[in-house]
Image 1 (tube, one colour):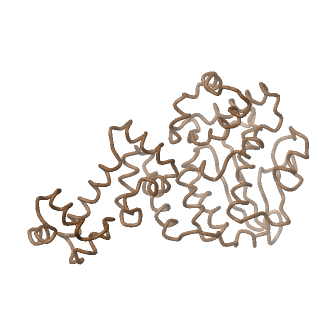
Image 2 (spheres, rainbow, N blue to C red; image 1 turned 90 degrees about the vertical axis):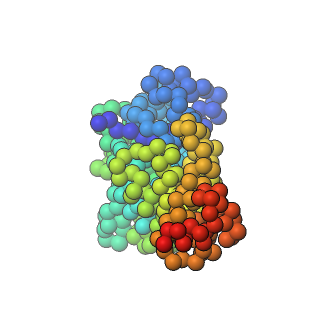
Image 3 (cartoon, helix red, strand yellow; image 1 turned 45 degrees about the vertical axis):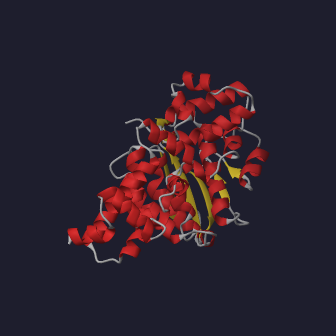
Length: 335
């Protein structure tokens, strides 16, 4: 099976070309990436085609540091739902373990692994692997991905440690000054591995502003939603609402954030599938209200809170609309 990547990974490329006054659509056509990728960040496209796109753009614009420049325009948000789990991990090291476990969700052809006591005791190496044939041109994609990883570490750790080591497995393709500017240190080229090495104490740093509840919800979502392959937008939203209706309050912006998408993107994907977000929320509340009212002794006021409604009066009106009965009548009939 060919290696794929979420179209969200094209965000920085599109922004870079726009800034250069170059239309990206003809370039996408040339490497056979569907133009829909510019609108649907969850679309899976060929990783090899993306590598080819970068190499072609670099030649056309005579840009030796293309990957490094694109990385400057990207943030951890390009990882979609994976970014939420990483940002809300307790420590930088835990975030990297999440990336190691779930990066295949972003791209089936990319891997990040954490190696302790490498290259020396007390250090750890974050090793990146691009699973494409090594004989194919891919320098700019490798540099883009490693620079992205470096930016993620800076973001999660609120800066990098004074000591760090960066190595790339290919020959240098741009002036060393550009690599020093991008990574904050000199880079070793034609190394055995493409990796960033830091003192292990850096991985123990706490992530500022992380929320444990969001971390657990996003991990549950990643485990369930991607266990059987890609889901439709409707299935993704329904899964989030089943597991986190109370904490999300059924709000579009919160659910979209958990999915690592812009609210407008999520709405558009749902519309393409003939679904409406408010309708999915209403159906989830109806189903959960029926279950809590008929299968538990939870006080009715608490049921309203569990399904994300403001108070019991709103639950009463909703039950009359859903079932033609008050919550108390639904409970009595169900019992």
